[in-house]
Length: 64
Image (cartoon, rainbow, N blue to C red; front, side, top):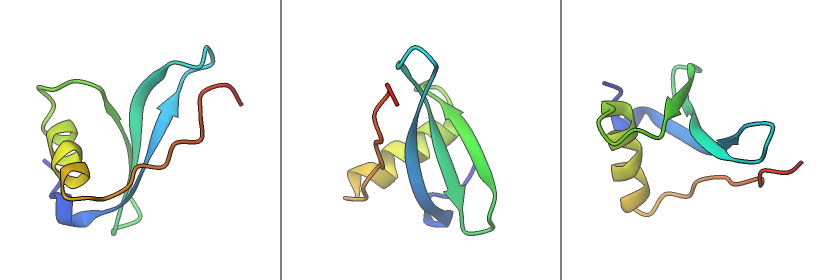
């Protein structure tokens, strides 16, 4: 599990149909992961905690 304190930024990731499918997460180690929208996923849970603490998710929309 990635520690939420290591998160630098999170961006919503959309598929070619414009559906929100995962979070593109960048960590302070320059690692980038795509985290699925699965409440059982521990990285997803860390993202939800990060958001609940007032951090902002980048959303560039799904139809670009």
